[in-house]
Image (cartoon, rainbow, N blue to C red; front, side):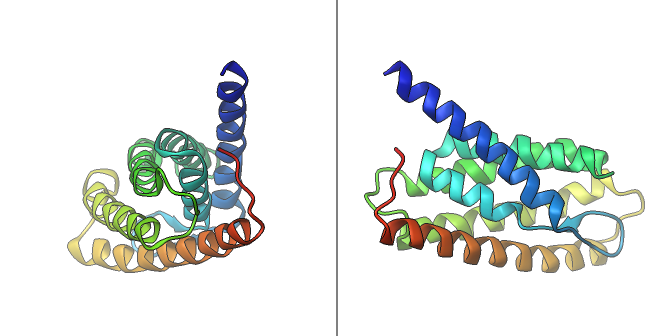
Length: 170
């Protein structure tokens, strides 16, 4: 029992670092007032599917918020922490109690989490970005669609490979 908890904490910490790296290594700045597109979504989705909602929430929120702080977007850290925690939790809930990593319900969870992210960042821009306009938030939301799509695609490729190899860590 104790060993299982320690193992899960270790994997959660490892995925926190993976989310941080995926978020910081590839950053495409967004126009009109801050933010950037990255591959961190893939790490959040993979962690949430493999280890559940709480691990996904922690790794996603903390990893992405630390990435914001370390790359000059500290003003986004608090909204990112909240939004990415929500994303990880949602995906983890949809993926719970499954014998396979990839299934329709899991992908539905990724899409719903992505929609939550888009709406939350859309609203957050009015608080975080001085002089934000509805048009700027719409452009940013459109760009976030690409980030979510890339995250879902990468997560599905990795998780499908794990399914095929019968690789389970639960």
